[in-house]
Length: 495
Image (cartoon, rainbow, N blue to C red; front, top):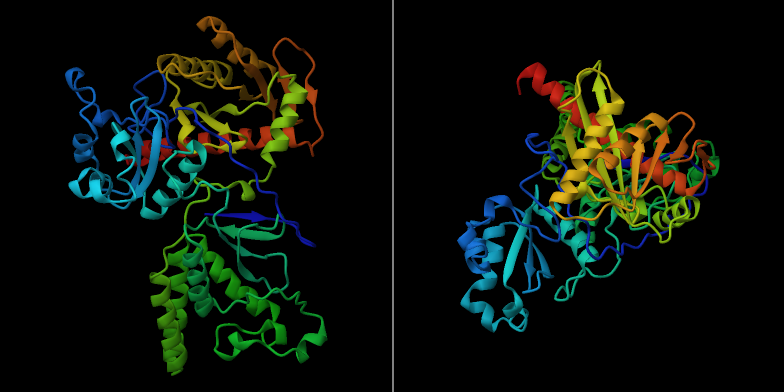
């Protein structure tokens, strides 16, 4: 996935936000399960518990032991979490094959392995979370280790961020480079990548295909001085079109960058179709060398599959708001006793009253916590009634938290104005529970409404606190809309 930073001029480095989550709230990953309980559930449960329902034993077999438990693990990528007698996670690992990798810890050979023999005896339970690929498993492992800080994970405890591929779209001749600290404007980012070596290798392969520049020169098309500049070795070996010597004009260079972006944006099919047509045309014109070059480029494209998913593995340095400043600002403007750590945000989506759905997203320490996202198909409301739908979602959220004995968030944010806020408050009143800091954010004027106060709170559009709330609100809206489209597709096509 990618994210684009608009703007130009001098680009400043974005401060890296530290993640200090020690025990993230129990949550459910982004998915579309059947709506059969008061709150949406999934086969994957929370980070503290991490127990999959399909792995639960019978009452008389509540804890079969880690050696027996791993035999039921899937042969798929994911992360495994080892726990001690107090239920604390003492080690987190990733695997291409969960069953095989986790099972290897409980073989006789582990007793002599110096890396684990001193602590494997502490492990009395083990659970897992599945991942879509080995790359995703690696990224998930790093985030969990940062958040939980297991005592036996020697690696990945530092705050060193994952590397990204950055395209400086604000330049006349955009450059492509490796970075751990992306610029905050005028760039398009891809990643994160699991390993720096993999990313550097990917850039080299991409450069052979798309022939972009990786230098840090500030090249302007209308500056004639560049005609006398001596290009680097990359131009000599045909891995760069040498815009530094104006050997290629701005339009042609940007065409190559457009193709690169097509590939990185997942439009591989369109790109391959376009390049195949060019190859056939070159062949018809008997430009066999050019046709052979395109053929080799197509083979290289087929071998490239290194990217992670930014929406699922967002890192602090590519987050658009400094989370720490946003949280400190919320503490001040909302009069909270302590700096908030967890924010839940609710939104509703529908089309003409059909397929009404609700979403709940969770931010921990100011950052999206995707395993905490939940989706709700509205069950008790007919037609268009955002107020009643908000009340249902909040009620089901409260029921779910009570059922799992989880704490309420520090801030409960509702997308809307006074009416939506009142509906959410009535859900708490009917449940007989004192709400946390319950607020709503109205879209048009970006006004913050608070329980018991008639006048809204209006903040500067540049306020870090407001921007953090906007990020949570916008993410809840995106999540609700995505679920709504899935349900519409299922209804229209029977998929």
